[in-house]
Image (cartoon, rainbow, N blue to C red; front, side, top):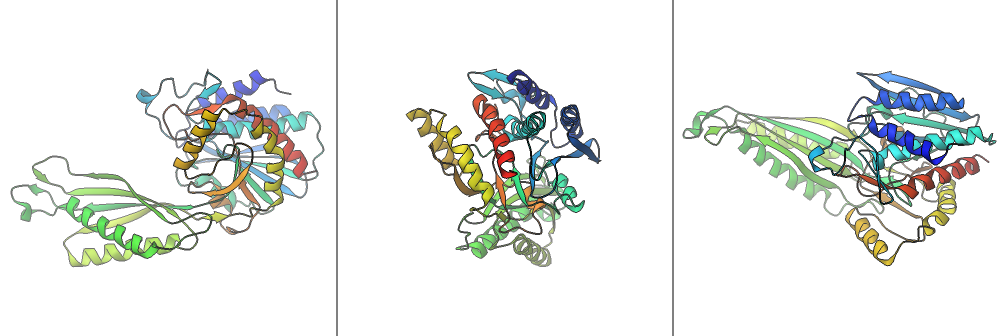
Length: 406
């Protein structure tokens, strides 16, 4: 069995790998080394420039429980961190480091649980299949490739170790990211008619699209996931105050529900832009940069019921103070999640997971859940994780895997 120091050392080594939207193969090599040492069958599946997925299996036959985590992390603004983001720092009962919550601690906990079950000689009547993916944060190419290669064909249940805290997430929204490019013609700002203002055209078409999306989706909701979310997150255009801008760009992020599909949303962009180009001197085009569907699992599945049974004592053993409970409730409200200090709640969330690619052919009713260590600091400066939660999850996973395959 791994002692606590080795468990921390593995997490520390993973955090040091700067797998920012790429270079996941370096993370996969660390996982492979640990799995090889334990005698667990595994394989690195490379693709692209230093990118890779990893698959590992323990046990044999059905049921097959797929467990998954992604190896990439998001970019950092180092100047906003109190510590080196690519060094695991322990302070006041917390771990700090980029990816410690999203989601290298979850990934490490999955691997350690498999290793300790193997070392203990635990009898498994079925198979644990680890799917460690590349690129979840941008486009989910790793999960897409694994699905295309058939790694989900024999799977009976799927658990992704994304940061849920002591909660069970069984549904999440889809995501549609669209980049709009506007091309104009430069001119001196004193003679605007000699040019074509790319920024003005972009703003006009954005306003029209936003209004049409809100009108089309108004009143359409999913009982678990809520409504469609539309955000203009990035906008660029122009380079100086006295010149008509020749180019402009906007990036839009939408969180989608089954009742109003990604295709329906994209059609609004397509038709609006085509009409606008026809009626004006604009040259506007769009590109879909991410397209994942909403998924809704079975909230009454045997996997979720088992998680609730196993996880409840760990949740209740936290011994949270009244102030900590108050802060946790506030944090949950801000992220659109429910909170309980004594019950493993089930819920849907806006954030997506690799499940959208893994379950592309069976998005509704599958035995699916997201259950992993973490908090609301994912993608934030000074990303953190409770040390006890990390160790708790290793123990919960061991019990979950062995009892699910009992």
